Length: 488
Length: 86
Image (cartoon, rainbow over all chains, first blue to last red; front, side):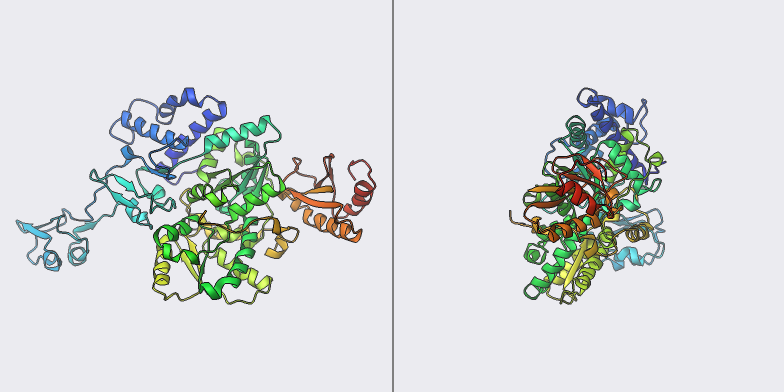
């Protein structure tokens, strides 16, 4: 049976499951007020000051899971009343202070922020500039450093604290990577969900054979359902009512070919190109380094490629992308590519939906999920895009020199962009992955384990098609528009 | 224009649907019928297992294999016979 990484993940799961369950019964509107009591039964509080606050927070979570309109259009939302107003002073002096005579702390402080009463040290927060020198010199390790987890998680500098010490997201800088969603220990930041729309769509499909709902599955799936095989998850998704489950990795094969050709054609002029498959990375450049935007590849992402490809084979298709990513929810509604994907859902939401429908995937038979090459599949982990592009250059005999700069996580991406901005990049191709480890480390992953990378590689090796050109050998790709139009 | 639709969903793919598509394309080229018959692909024709599933225009779906596609092409697609299983 499913194990949760932590209580926050489990709590969100319970809410999504209850919402999904009522939506499947068609009684969500009239019964939504029952959900807090189902998630958190009884009269005693287990997490917050009282049961009433817990239920009030649950109401907010339900609203987000139902995809209701919020105060801003951002996919990522702070639940104000769930934010615990963590301490904002970075350094504080603890009981460990012995009141020594040397006072290394105040000697080391360049800002005169440390004072002493009865030999004991105190920090004046108005003068402290958070340099950390006092912490380094204290012989008793009596000075602690606390950074709010949301602020530490945010690589886009989009999080700040208001007068009431509540977290606030600057939508103009937020790249929807979801790192704060994953890192907040109080679960006070959540991604909006489309599960209710998706359940409605599946319901339509059950009643009308002309409504066919396709699931495009991100290759990160391989490391997700640790208690069942990927083939069993595929069967479970079909039991939910999806017409077909298709690998996003086939789109990755297509995009790799397009992106390698784009690289060869434009690198002389651009000098450096970045990948474009990670929407949070692309958004980070557009929002926070707009002067570098011309370096971003104009290729669509594998998700969009697959959505467009499915719709080229079946113009009536509805396409739902399933992945570990919160930023894909934003990408799918970007103006120039919104034709491709109807809805995005996360692995966490998939788990909750399967359980709401009482589908026990561990008991399902295995269905194959096999179109892409191993190179398309390893897009799911850091370094995968680069190896696919290298493979295309080799297979299609493209005459160009690729000098990759792999960036694992938004902090590394940011560093590479600063170096690019200064004109000192050590290569000509930046692979940008906003999540550490790549997609498998995504904010809405079910599992963030250290073995995930190996699992993806093993899954890659199981692909029937051994090379990218073999995986694409029957497709006429001229009918697909692979170009982004970021300015639309 | 006649359309032959071949399922390339995972289940049919692992049973050789890419080979079926390629053979069909070769046959159409050999018969110089490119402007009369078009090979299309679909992710799932609704009948998983025991494929490769294939459909001509709006006809019923049939199960073929790489080894049987040539017969299917001449007898059912060109011969105009009923689309029963080959």
